[in-house]
Length: 175
Image (cartoon, rainbow, N blue to C red; front, side, top):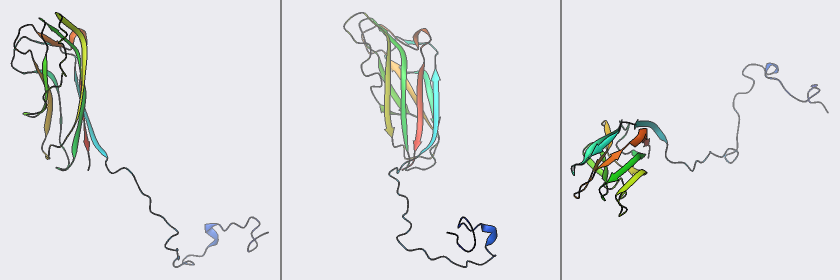
């Protein structure tokens, strides 16, 4: 069957005169808006890493050389922070103590999760992953960094031993 003399029943756009169709009427229920189950988006990703050897015998926290900075685009957005401290070793029958900071604010007080204490004299080659969804309420540049110390009791702690890599990734999440 042909329509209007066209063998295939198809009307090509060059067959329609200019302004031949003024408006189209579409039923209210003919088009359904797309619905998304995702309410958040990743707006930016920043990464930092180090393989620089770190060692301390101090009971005072000090930077291990791992940091990354991010500037949120809205104060209501969150920062997803995750990473891994590589090649942690302790000696002297002690354990390391670590923390994750946003600028000068501690946001994870036990980033090492008690790494190193085994009751023996040494813990070698341990990795320590960490993550947190932070709400900094800021649009200023923020620096996230990791620090370690050896609690009272002697011995030492090292990180990035034998070229191990420590890494941190920051993601700004819209809300």
